[in-house]
Image 1 (tube, rainbow, N blue to C red):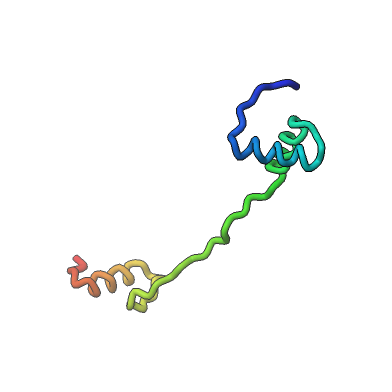
Image 2 (image 1 turned 45 degrees about the vertical axis):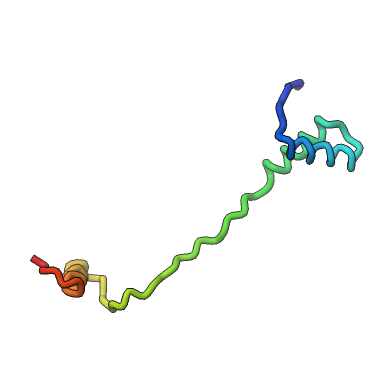
Length: 79
């Protein structure tokens, strides 16, 4: 298929470099770069949960008790 595309300068440079290294046509170089992009796995940073000490040690299995303790710690009237 014949199509006209506009390449960003860095993409055009990469395609031209590949074309010269492998002695292939520009279309073949662009296709190869596109295929590499399609098959490359995204590198994502592993998720890490960060914790911070807030100075309170409470059991949060009973939400009502936990909220009451927090209110008392903040000097609020729980009612």
